[in-house]
Length: 217
Image (cartoon, rainbow, N blue to C red; front, side, top):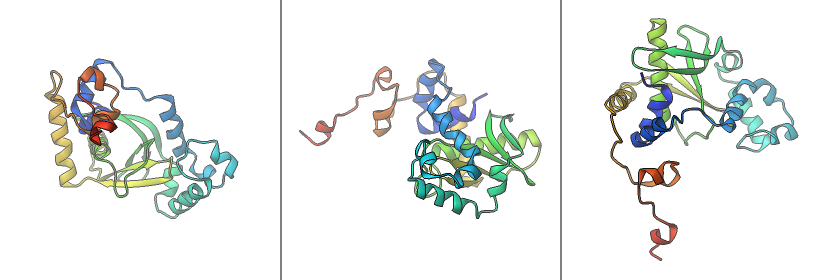
């Protein structure tokens, strides 16, 4: 049964998932965990001074970060974000399983995933969309009730985005799930900009181009 993180990686590049599985590279580095822990300190950090914030893995100036948390505190989800009913909950659905960083109270409950990076200008990144749908589907299966949305937290910038389970997003999730299930060898190479920062590019054998070649020098 694929995990949420495997589906997310496959949505980005199926071949990258193949090599990650081959090397058993699923655990996040310590730097990721340090950033994710910020999501459990919102109340404290909203009042923190510049020196305290400057020592943390945030991606904004201290003043801008406090402003972001102040804005977040005006949303109805604030109290639940600060006091979730469950944290680090492993859930297993019909098709996938994984870790929910938070489960917010309410009827129905809201699964929440924490991203260590920055969000796009609007919405969330496509791989995170797939992961969000997977999380909601797994929790819905386990609780035997419909879960209409997942939240993605970006604590490094104090932003939280909602991912409703639309027909289009669910269809994308199903397509990625089929790809992962059918994987019995290395998928085709993508050989595009995704390869430049991929840790498996050498083993994969893609041809990355230098800045000079891109400029025709």
